[in-house]
Length: 109
Image 1: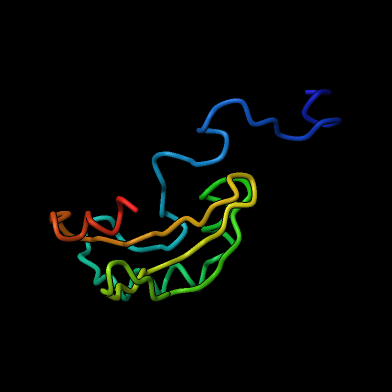
Image 2: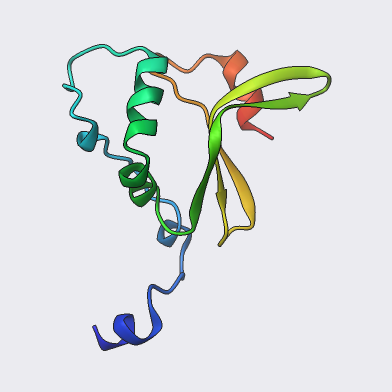
């Protein structure tokens, strides 16, 4: 306890930065209610502070629907964050249905 108070949270393993799994109870959306991706995005943006705490340490919000171009093809990523601990952008593509192979190409950047 004393070490946490004097040094702060130490990063020893990846799980210290990125949480898994994510819990979206703070949105107040019933678990069995279907929701559209844009409704989920709007609810997350409204609760961005709570969402960033859920993501983990070092995240900064960049924006929503940010354009990313790969091989002259434009994609719009649902949410973009920068992690100052990782020195990297974290792209979040929300899916409320089964993940299809065509969505994976953007994930593998």
